[in-house]
Image (cartoon, one colour):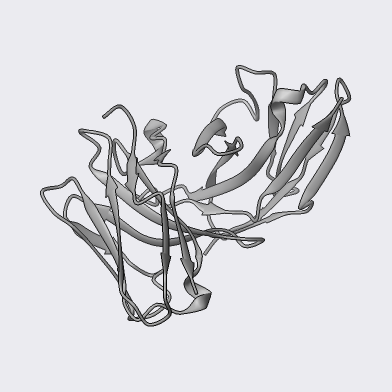
Length: 117
Length: 115
């Protein structure tokens, strides 16, 4: 597709269940990022992929959170044993390269809204 | 490490009035600076950026921002706003030599333009 695609757009789950959120980046974009947007908290960096490897996963809030990327394309963010504080919009972004000096812009998807009851 | 503070969470303004959205950052190294905009029910998109050169940068829809290194600020301004400018605006920074391209965002400022 032309843009970053995320699914599902909305997910309601019960506390303690596992969820998977998917991101399909723009074709040819080697870098992929996951952010979390909570009310009043702005955008919180979670993890960054360059190809299939994750050089920076410093933002993952706990070991219940994990992410992988396969084929240098699609990425999945998994949250195990969800808690109510995990409720947020999870945003995925991709970019052409890793250096912002070239003006590499992040292109964002519309997000996956997760509600944990 | 870098951090970003957007001083106003909400800015209500009347149409055709000027507006300034404030952004201050903290960093021990040189940074790139960005403003992203999120229109209702849409994803974030880049509004403008400062990488190097002229400290005053402009967007195609009339916004401008000025990098002030001494004050560590990157405030966003528009001399006359339109209803269509209603959106949430995010200031972001990235360390100059951060090859990962990771952006650190502020908390966002909700601009509400009223007729």
